[in-house]
Structure formats: structure tokens, C-alpha cells
Length: 247
Image 1 (cartoon, rainbow, N blue to C red):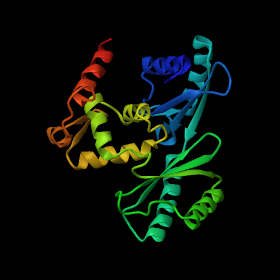
Image 2 (image 1 turned 90 degrees about the horizontal axis):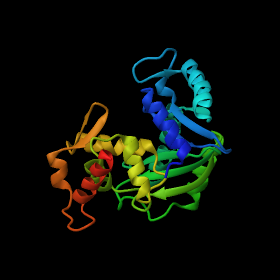
Image 3 (image 1 turned 120 degrees about the vertical axis):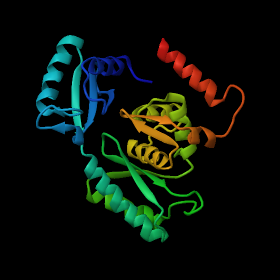
């Protein structure tokens, strides 16, 4: 659950119609929050869906004056992480002799890396061999990262149906809101790029739509979800989510 400081700064940004593409966590000291923003949403000048380094400095000063919070902006390089993912994915393709394996990277503030392997459940071995683990570890060390853990698809990575259900419950929704939904259900570290890739996969299958920067489920998507009765029904969960929004 978000801390009061994280909630406060997120609402503060929303009131100023600041870019939605941020993640907020508590800093290491009281009154500090760390705000991550993708480099793809930072430009020389402020524009639609983009901020600038000058605006970030300005917001930092105002937030401290108005909210009493120290904001530490961190600009993340998505392209750099995507390149690392591509390199490690190639290592798994070679090791398992399969082209249907994709690796996603999750990096902590202290440069520890978790890898999430996305592949058809029956297409890969039940575990990662010591040789592959050491190869990946060496690869990450060469780019300044330390391997923490490798997660296999189907263990701590949610199946596509869970992502589709989240869209039904939250719609209209964003990838970031889906990420929070999944985190509350035990999938706490799944990389946002993995979630976006799943949403794009569902969109291409016409199970969800993308409009006005939000996702919604289609009739085909609704038809593909299993019917569950009782308190665990997605319809009941959807009604409860709508009720919270109204309040």
C-alpha cells in the first residue's frame, strides 16, 4: 500500500496534470520520496506527455515548499534496459534452442536484477541450470548489475488470463493500474514492460481495446474469461471497484 507521502505527491502531480508516466516510492529518510520517470517522457521542452529537466527542478522546489517533501527525481533509461533484456533473451534462446522465450528485467535501486522468463509453460525446463545462471550473472556484471533471482513463467509471473481479468475489473485502466492490481494479488515485482507486452498481445487478439491512453475489455475478451460464481466472481470485483471510484 502507498504511504501517505506517496499518495500526497501523486495527487499533487495529478492536480498539475503532470505526466502519468511516473512511479513513486518512499525515500530512505523521512519526508523524502523518489519519483521515477522514463527518459522517453523527458525532453528539451515541455510538450504533450513530456516534461523537461527544468520543469523537474521547478517542481522539486515547489513540492518542498508546499508539501514539506523532498522529491528525488530519477530518470530511467528504458532503452538501456530493453537492450539488456534482448541480450539475455538471446542467451536463453541459445541455451534452450527455442525462439518463443522472452526475458524481462526488473532492477532495484541498489542495482540488483530480477529476471522474469516469459514462455509457454511446457516449452522450457523446470529450472535454470547452473551454467545458464552463471552465464547470465556474468552478463549482468558486465553492465554493472548483480543477479538476484530468476523467475520462471507460471510460478511468480501471472498468466495472461489474470491480466485480462484485471482489465475487466479496472476498465478503463492503464498499465500502471494493472501493475498495482497484480501486486495486490501476490505478483509484486513483475516488470511494467512485461505487463505492457501482455496488454499489447491481448489488444492484437481483439480481446481488449486501447483508446485515450486506457485499456478496456471487448466482448470477445469477456467471452474468453471463465465464468466464476460467488464472491470471487470478476463481476462482483468489478462492482466493488466501481463503488470505490464513486467514493
